[in-house]
Amino acid sequence: MDYAFEPVGVPRTYTAGFERRTTILPVGRLVNKDVNDVDAWRTTLRMWRERIDALKDAGWQALATTAAQHRLRNCYPCGLVHEVKGVPDLHTWSCQRDYICPWCWGRKASDVFKRILKFVPCDPEPRPSLFLYTDRAVFEASKSFDYVLDAVLARRDHSAVHDVIQKYKPSGSYRISHVVPEYDGECPIWVFQSRIVLLYLPGTPIPDSLRQCKRVRAEEDVSRHTLMRVMASCLRYPSSMLTEDPPRVLAVLLAHKNLRLSQFTGCFRERKKKDKSNGKREAESAVCAVQPRADPESDLVPRQCGTNSCI
Image (cartoon, rainbow, N blue to C red; front, side, top):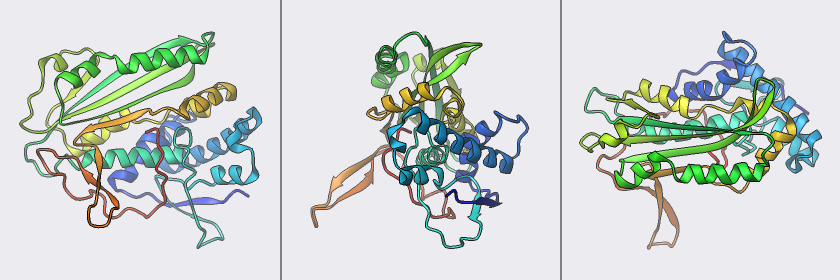
């Protein structure tokens, strides 16, 4: 049974807006470039459920049971405040398939955004500098997916900006890489995309070699709105996962299952430390020159999220 999710409001928090910019609007604009938030949300819900049906027919084992199909089809939507018609106290969940589910992708992307937002002050005090590195490679669909995957991993780990990170340590960095199926005209292709965000806190020297890198976009004196714009570009949902041929999408899903596709370094990392008093493990922020401020979003709607992520 499909739950009748119905939007009832458009929250104006940073994270809700970020979820809409990274997931709902890119999907909605596949149908209408001038789509509004609510119509984009409805389009995303419809296309996600249609994709589940197509992947089930293609033989995705994650949809082998009726219960699994129900869990994915009714994954808790993000971006808007909504309710389920006729069921006021319904228990909701996330399917934790963030490598394809647009709702889980949006939640994970907003979690990344919130972690980085802690280091961008709201006051006009000295602000950090942000650099976005992008890499893109196209492979013919005639190449086997294993060949594409090997080439992608080699390229991801030996990029020019990766060398810069090793030589000139930024205050923090975040990297996300993935492969998506697309079409070049009528020709099917595999597209590798990698994006790396580098943050330099005030007072941290910025290497000239980074500024001169052709694939780097620089943002000085970063505000929260600038950060949202840059991170939304970095973490945009790959909408081709909802539109391309199901067998090709299935190949990507099977490959992503055992890959770590994102990584934090520096002040963005949350390291685990053993508590000597009771033996339990608790997360603590990595040591950095500037302590992060409190959670920038205190009015978020509580939700349940998984821990395994490709974002």
